[in-house]
Length: 144
Image (cartoon, rainbow, N blue to C red; front, side, top):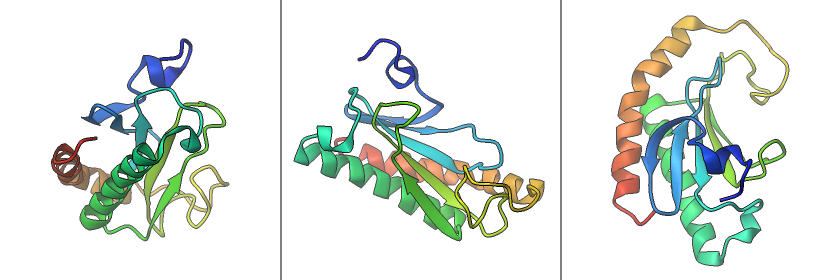
């Protein structure tokens, strides 16, 4: 744990799954209801700070979250990112994207392309419990 690190000192969002090595949270990002983060428990700034086995484990968790979002939400695309510029604690963004979201085809941090669709966001939000139940089941069956 590193003092002053928001991901060491807090969950980083609504907790969906917590394992010995990592946790999955649902981020509160306006306009993007299917925005998740896979957060490594121990403070590590870079992916290469993990040993080979932990790198595999981390990416397996990212893949599980991606698969569950694809199966339950049927997005146009899944965005994966591990930036760490603002918070230098290893975490992966896993974001379900839709062709009619406000920023598509740009990144969620790019310029707005169109108005947000409250109906689309509500429809996506309604499907999240099933996607999260699948995440919990699949992640819980492994040593994450």
